Length: 101
Image 1: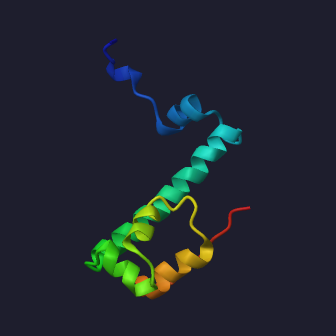
Image 2: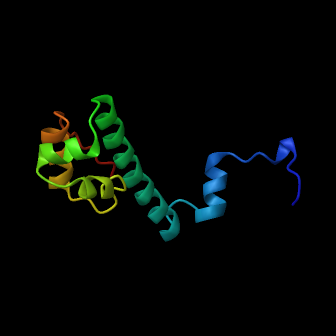
Image 3: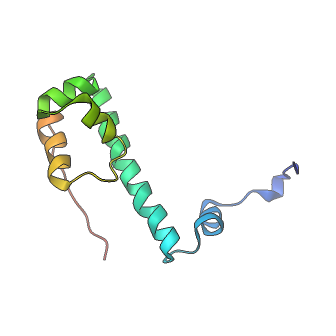
């Protein structure tokens, strides 16, 4: 394995360009969409933990199962209505959407 030199440091955008292609390419757009879904899952998880809720307790609040909640930590296939229910009924919050066109 080749040792890395200090000047081999690459900024994040260059890393993404190399790994997924330039912005606007299908592979880079797929990466960006999956990363946004991942962030939603992390936000839900952090809000749940901040309220000292287990996945099972959150599931009970919205009328579903712990397995369903644990699968939603990925959030890549979550429906908007489900997301709103988790946030509103499960976590006592609200959802605000922003579009970048």
